Amino acid sequence: VPELPDVAVFKQYLDSTALHQRIAHVEVRDRRILGEISARDLERALRSHCLDSTHRHGKYLFARISEGAGWLVLHFGMTGSLGYFKGEEGENAAHRVLAFVFEDGYRLVYNSKRKLGTVDLTDHPNRFVERKHLGPDALALDLPAFQQCLQSRRGAIESLLTNQSVMAGLGNVYTDEVLFHSGIHPKRSVASLGGPEVRRLFENLQEILRKTIEAQADPARLPCTTSPRTAPEAKSARAAEQPCGP
DNA sequence: CACGTTGTTCTTCC
DNA sequence: TGGAAGAACAACGT
Image (tube, rainbow, N blue to C red; front, side, top):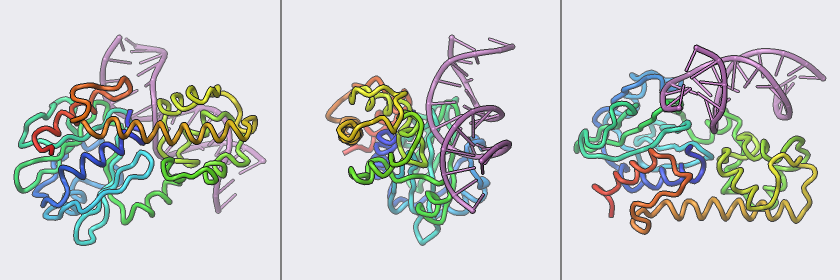
């Protein structure tokens, strides 16, 4: 289940594989994944352009399209992942959804078993974030901003942390993890949390997100090992780094 | 075959 | 008008 840390790793992966390469073609294998755009729109926006840079907000990954042609938006749903392969290598016929085919024959593949993610286009990430009413990115928060998120909120802390319009990036997995580490029951009401608990929660949140990204981001350091909370398809993404990795 | 899984979006209400 | 809360929905394995 790609949440903030997983998407952060996808971002690094995309950065280290697929930037600055001219796109020859976009293969849409399953159009259910397309958001408000058609396959034609996507092709038109990307063909003979490059991906210049990336940006992440919460669970969304954005890639800037060269020559000011807007931004690509990737959301991974429950089972989405990225892989970079030479030719048709490593494509799982049952899971493949779309592929960005570069002029050199390599391709960046978006795979998803359950096809619940979204691929879309936007003028600018900020515009997209605004339109989706996403809160600030969880990893960009400082303590005062975090306290602000909790201010005058009712309901359980669990549902606040997973609410993307409060702060963006956490799903069930990391929310549970962070609450457990902080010794706070998920059903506790936000209002019942004391100052020290809020502080502890904030610090654990930042640390767990950072450590998770760090641990997963460098596959060379952790060869062939997979943390229990890594989606199976994230594994193939990492395996795919070999043909192009440093 | 209905259900569990998870996260987003749609609906309803104030 | 926007926001909060809850229902509906999506795909697939069991």
